[in-house]
Image (cartoon, rainbow, N blue to C red; front, side, top):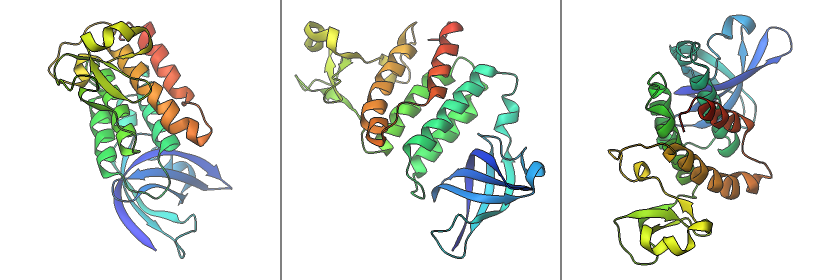
Length: 242
């Protein structure tokens, strides 16, 4: 069995002497692991977030297999070395992919969304909000997308401001106001990319996406949200970017 595809590196670990086991998220084949020969020589390529042209081969489909070729296309990790917050964002996004997606199942739209996010990370003022959109896209890809199209109470499509933690459905400001203490705030930028971003919006988006990621994806796997995500939110908070 074999395939060739574009892929995002998720990480690598040593295997014996002179080998590594790499994990990638490929566009048309999903999350795969495989042996990489070359040891230290391959490490610059295998930094999380880099985009590679990968070939995977194995005699049997259930085997670990190995990568050949594994060629650098975009060294995104290197480009972010001077931005620790962006590196934290990259680490968090990669951790979510590793923790949420099943192995060897393709999610091409999620792959494309991760590429868009990574390519936006040099733009400091843009990517934190885009990151929260990526998390909501991850929920949708896993089959747990939120219904943010209309109010669950009135059917209205305007002035949506809340999300029910029980159903994942939106509500207008007026319909939800009497119950605001138990509802999750819906930041306007999640509905309209042109909406003005104000202080607290990104924090609310993280809270919204995190609530459902934890309960609908990670709790089912017997896990909590990745620590890398918590560290990202802390860094953004200290920098005043939430």
